[in-house]
Image (cartoon, rainbow, N blue to C red; front, side):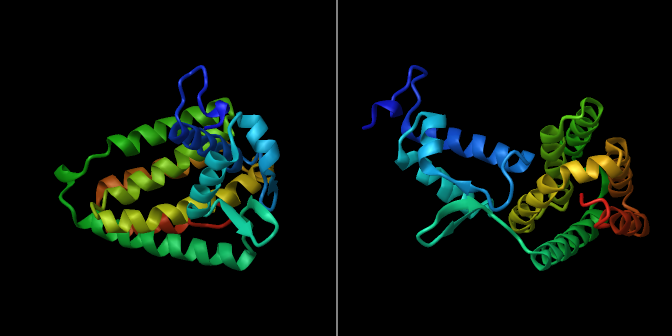
Length: 220
């Protein structure tokens, strides 16, 4: 075993994989690494102080999440999507969220557990106040996952999650542009309106807020 796979902190190989996944995922979703950027193994092994084996496993796992793509004889890079890809992803997200909302609306209000949704909304608000873009991105993803989870459909949630993660790439790539044109507080207000609609169980209100919320102008 490479001596670097037994660190002072006692990290085991699997922990090293998780560490690399976590740091690379953070860089990608925060926009520190941009779509199309090459992921050079030599640079990354030095950065994380690990051998190639756990790094390659980390890249493989990120590939399964749609954040990294492997090119024949050219190594790995941050995934790139075309405008058509994003149009299709937004359409899929919209369809899944509308289906989830229809299920939420039919559930008895007393069965809804909104703790995760409330927590994500609070995190989104805190991130907006401190202009923490990575935290805002994470809170946004958590909010939408919690909203879909209210439908109480495991398979729906498993289908939805990779779609929202892939859309984070679009968000990360456009953070600076959006910051120049849209107030972070507006994003919080839109999510709060969607929260209130979901909790109300009013189908027309939910549909209206989803229509407003899904606008590509806001990208999230």
